[in-house]
Length: 324
Image (tube, rainbow, N blue to C red):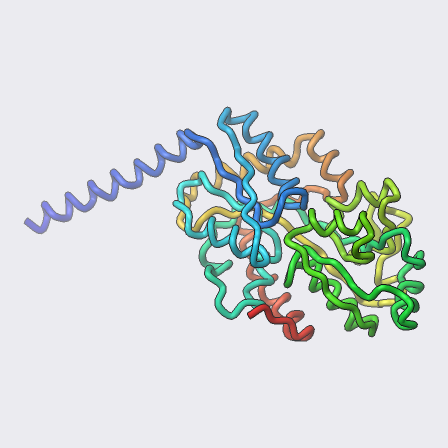
């Protein structure tokens, strides 16, 4: 009897693993939902549409980009974390919901290190310190002097409370010793609209959505937040070389699936996104947006997420930022 039970158990296990293998081989067999945790128009939306369009070309299945913004990216991230682990619901995440929010929220509805299967790091980009052209500051030193005299508007926009844009500005406040008031928006898209309109005059914003407006002159780029100058804005100094030594902040974006997604499906997604990132036209498009593709192995992305949770936790504590 025991042998019969053991045989039955082995048969059930074999059937299960064969089913997983078949599922991975036939994947995708229906439309894929690409969730972005911020409103349309921002970096996650742009990247999801670039990769989604190419995935559709390869696999013939629709890739539907769907925004679920709110709570600093937590709503969209939590939706994916609690979705079926079958590869048909993906998150184009960012350092906010996948790392920073672990320190900002005491009751985060998901665990970014436990509840996701990392797929691929899609982009790693510096932020740009931007102002409306009406602000009388042509560089970082002039901006700091303007803030300290009290003659400049001291409000700054961000993609939301606790976002990399917000915390980068908080870090700037600490290091430059200036006072500014945070005006949070529900994503980069709405924040950039008000920046261009002059409703708010200053922000740190991801290079991907902000670059066209800097190049067109609608906004003025004062500096980039990377340690070295950007190839797409070579004349724009870094914050560090402009009077705030040691300043550096990088925003990153990547794809995750719900934890428990079959490893074969994660591997298939990773391989496809690597293939897309290495296509000459996509590489050119991303580089022109200020984001050379940095796609790599899934486990490398997982290690990055864990290390960034620790890094941003220290910054959140130093800036004394809390969202609940």
